[in-house]
Structures are given as structure tokens and as C-alpha cells.
Length: 255
Ligand SMILES: [Zn+2]
Image (cartoon, rainbow, N blue to C red; front, top):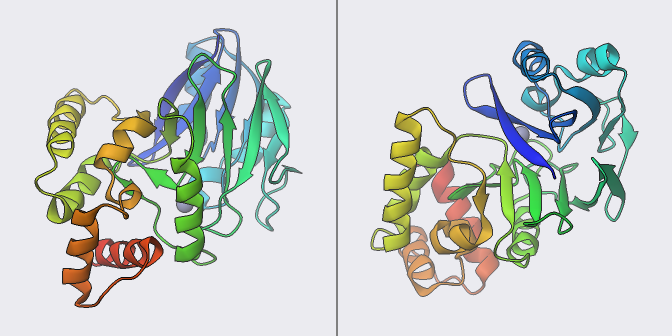
């Protein structure tokens, strides 16, 4: 059985460690010391590394860790990453379980996410595409319409799917979501839950798709309340769910 544990790095990143109490894989090891100490402390033998995208906080420690443990690195084709390149439709076997590679551009052009429904609960390693109650910003090579399409695709996964996002942004995301969707009981309940978790220094992640469909405005762009709030904000008539999403992303950028 695969266990998944977060290794906090920098101020708000998580490196997800998938392991079976003996062998381990890492997702986006951006910093060396906390990752190395986690593996040593738990007597885990590293078998491989997967990368979602090539921002420095996701890949900085990759060459050092890959060399130290002599393990393969799988990730997108990108000038800043030396790895075995994978792309849409490929499969990577992690601890005996195949994960399917999806190309999920938007935050950045090369962004990959990794999905399996062959674990007890389906799981998605979603990097900076989707966060709890939020989504990734559009960075240098990114595109907001591509991000909308990537997130719509995620929205079609089974509701129980666990979402392993790579930043602890949930409380800040909730503050924005409340400005848009303040009468949403599920959102207010999620705020209380996350406040309690963060007080105890516990992660608010993973989340699951069912909870996000109820609370995350970026997954709710077809809901009347989100449409009307975005139309009020933009002072324009929004004709499609994509236009609502683009407006919402721009609103959050300046929030
Ligand atoms: Zn990023």
C-alpha cells in the first residue's frame, strides 16, 4: 500500500513522498536538506523522482538528490531539467502502481500531472495546477485558457480523488473565495477546519475533488453565484464558463 507524506520545504511548498515504509519516490524535491533528512529519519530507500514543472522551488535539489541516491528522474521536456522525458499518455510505475501522465498546461506550458485510480482511493499529483480553494497563477510560459481546460479535465475525475497540491496556500485562497462566494456554507466550514489544522501546524492537504467542487471558485465557474459576482466585478456580460474563469483568475491576481 502506498503512503503519501508531505515534506515541508521553503516557506510553503510540500514535496510529496510516496512510500511503502521501505521504498520511496519524491515529487518535486526543490530543497535538499529537509528531503534528505526525511528519507534518512524514516529509513526509506529512494527509487525515483517525478517532476511536475520546472520552477526553481520544484527542481533545485533534483541533480543532487538523483546523484546521491542514483535514481531516475521523470519529468517534462524543459531546458532547465535533465531527466527521462515523459508526456501525455505515458505511464510510470511507482511502487508497483502505474501512474498516467497528463499534460496540464496553464500555470506553465510544460506542466505535467500524474494520476492513478489503481490505489484504494484515486490520487492526482497536481503540482501548481490546482490548489485547495484556488489554482495556479499564470507564469511566464503559461496561459489562462489552457489552465481552464486543464482544470476542467481534473474536474471530471472521480469525486473521491485525492489532490496532492504542492503549496500550502489554502487560507489565503479561502480569503479570496469568501470575497466571491461568501454565503457558501461548505467554504465557511472548510475555513474553520483549515484554521484548526494550521494552528497545529498540520497541512491542509491533500484535499479531494468532492470538497473542491463545493468550495473552490475556480471549479465553480458555471455556478450562478460565481458568474454574477464575476460579471459585477468585470462590469461586463460573460458568455462562457471560460470567460468567467479568466475574469476570476484576473480578479484573484489583484486581490
Ligand atoms: Zn510553479
